[in-house]
Image 1: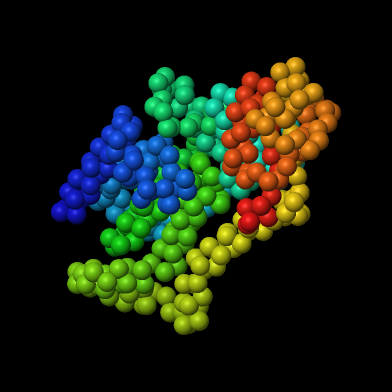
Image 2: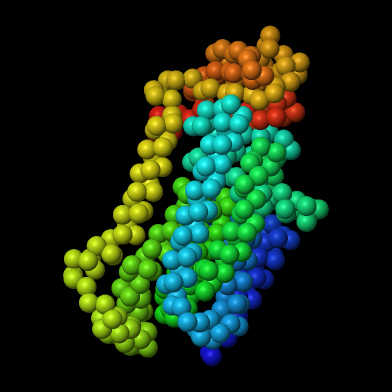
Length: 374
């Protein structure tokens, strides 16, 4: 088929892009401004994976589309399985974030940071639990990892063993995502290839509240509950008569199979938007619930197994890059420090990670959403 030839060609272009990104830093500086808003703080590693996964799906689609079309189950059957696996992939790391902090005796509503060998952060709002597992595998397979690729493998020591399940989840999720392309018109197919690629990246790097994950969930639900209207709008926008005719035929078949009231159809079409709103409000709500309850509250930092000799408690501020220390106490093999809240959290994390390198196994930092809002 002519379409498959185009898909194969496009797939080869994408895989070439991924390879060029891996071995060179030149191309990435031109692509990243466009990819960064989609992948939520794009990095070289994310960019490579993004182009690589899309390329693989396009190439497989061009080679095996006829075999996939011969499967007895419809595309939505596999898409529903994909969404179910995505939900499991979201619940597991969120649960492990809680378990990990309980094991370490830390507050659940904190950002946990490991300073060595490369500083890595993880929290309920942006989890790197699965990323650390994948990163550890990458480190064992590739000796010279290019700069700009962050593997988060320094978290591996703290992550519960159940996180290893991502090694099974990812291939299965990729397979069901690929099979979900069955019997789709080109607009829905393009949307799914793009959005499910984002979902695969977001589940590993960021989890539920990461932009790529949200894009994946929203788009998958949009295709399930509003696919025909999406295809129609796309076809009408580009005035593609062939796709419009396909849409009309499919709509007639759908009407014969399922006669639903107008209210039910409207409600179905609103489900993706409702889910999107729930995810966003849940993120904001979680940030408020877990945050210090007033704007001027001090940051709370808990160091795990600190090296007290290298920290020099008599002049702790000088050992923390000049950060203003309000108070500190050592108990239960943890050094609990209160810092002035005037620092933005990203700058504070960077300063602490650098200052505490080789001085502690890891540390947690409290949230302060009121500071973010200001």
